[in-house]
Structure formats: C-alpha cells, structure tokens
Image (tube, rainbow, N blue to C red; front, side):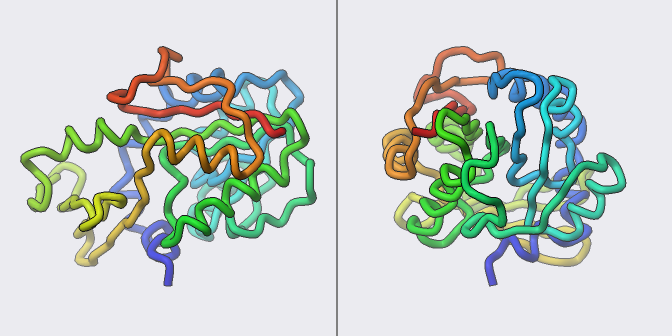
Length: 238
C-alpha cells in the first residue's frame, strides 16, 4: 500500500502537522499571488488536504475545486471550508480535459509515488486537465536546503514534545529520496518522498507538456537559487 494512503488519513496527521494551520496565514496569500490568475478562474487545488489554503484562493476571487486521496482530510475540509471536493488519485484525475485555468500544488506534494514514471504521470494529468495557457503552481522544498538542514541530525531520533511526536529523517542509499519516520500516538508512520534536482523538475515539466515561466526561491517571489528553501515553479500548459 502506498504510504500516504495511511499516513495522511490517520488522526495523528492533524497532530504532526498542527503547525501548518498557522503557516497558512503566510503561505496562502503568497502562493495564491504567485499563481497569478484573474478573478473568476477555475483552479484545482491538488491536493487540497483539509483546506487550510482554500480561503486564500477564494479571497482572490478564484473558483476552487479541491481534490485529495484522504477521506479524513476531505471530511474536515467540508466542515471547515465547504467547496466542491473530490476523492481522487493523481495518476488518473476524474476531470475532463482542459477544464481548468489553474492547478495549485502546494507544500511538496509531488514525488510521493515509488516510481518516477508515476510521478511524471501526476504532472501529465495536471497538464491534461488544464486548458492551453493554463497555469500550474508547483511548490517544492529545495533539495540543497534539505541537504544542509539534515547535516548532523540525519538518522537521529529527534523529540518534539510540544507537538507530541518523535522524528527521524534519512536519505535513501541513492540520495534521491527522503524517508521521514515518525512516532505519534503510539503508532509509526513513514513518509518516502522523491527530492528531485532542479534539472529533473524542469525535465519532467517539459515532458508533461509545460513551459516554465518563472521559478521563485521563496514566498515573497524572490528569484530562485539552488540554496533556496522553496522551489516554486510557475509553469504554463502548452
């Protein structure tokens, strides 16, 4: 079973990621601005999670449809931010071709699948549902930043008592993926995410049918550098 089917659909998810609710006040307006679509545009929020960024998309006058694989997150989304929602698989989106003006993919939500073919398929599906000229905003963690952040702590169990969990982070033997193990509420979880290079991101976007228009290095829209904490790609559907 894919790791995210359990990890993101468990009540402990809301404990581990409790800080993201507060982060949304900064991330939401900034990412919505970088998406840079006019009011009235139809945007697919993929994955939408429990909807923490949704109010900031709607505040810009965007028509949003959320999609996620987690029924638990979708249930909370419906309660907190009632908009059209769909339970889906990124590899086969249940939307007709060219139905959207934008796809909003925030918080390192690409690279979850075990094979690079499946990860490419996610981008290909994003391109399929976008109209020509439509915009994908792909928000990733910077690879060099993660490498630097893990120096001296890789493989060690770290305690987060206020948040209520323990965590150990390690690179895969080929240094292409990061495995994040967590212990929370008496249960073990393990995220396993591909962390691509900039060249790999660009190559996949090109192969999926996108032209990279801008790449930002932070939420404030500063230019991309390899050492940036975030790599935010604004790509146009050909």
